[in-house]
Image 1 (cartoon, one colour):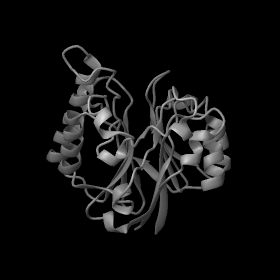
Image 2 (cartoon, helix red, strand yellow; image 1 turned 30 degrees about the vertical axis):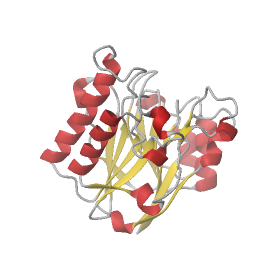
Image 3 (tube, rainbow, N blue to C red; image 1 turned 180 degrees about the vertical axis):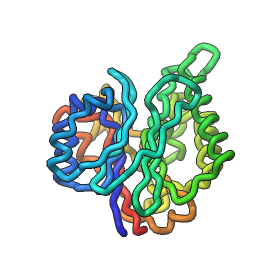
Image 4 (cartoon, rainbow, N blue to C red; image 1 turned 45 degrees about the vertical axis):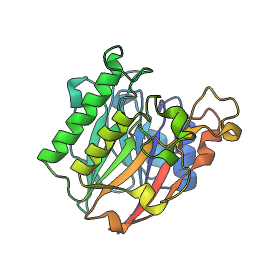
Length: 262
């Protein structure tokens, strides 16, 4: 069985339903994981998705904030969702495919503007969220699993437009990178995107504040696809659909893809 998976922070699934439909029609991934849906589950606009063959969904939602959903052409069953750091946020949902693969879809807290938990509660929440993810993976080692989502951290020097300038900017600080790496290692996850594209600048997010985002190209790779080591060798064809950042009324994130032969 071969399937293609995409992950995308959509920044409101109802507001940006047209470009979700565009992606599904033009790229046709078998599974699409969305973050920051900003919708209760019962308000997610399913009719258009169903018409394109995406008749399966597992999701966690809340009004106006957060929210994660997995849309699938393939049968998928709800495998739970955790509220790490007890924030009361809809930031994680898991689904299990018929081939036994579990897909974890995460929206890790952004962490606010100041990388100091003493003056910025949101930064502390981000670190605590990652710590609880790490501890959960230590306690229950994932197998045959794919973890995707907006993890809100660009870990490598070539995951940002300027490593030195961003060292004190939330999403690329050493303490965040350390927390992310520990979480990845605890779960035995391989960074599939960088397994396929090991060298070079690579971004999935460009700020709305940059009028000419494509020209300035001050991006960060905040969106990730990981696989446990027992299936990571089955992954290939990773890519970022950069052009989606330029679609009408876009998200500030671009979709990230990978294919798995399992």
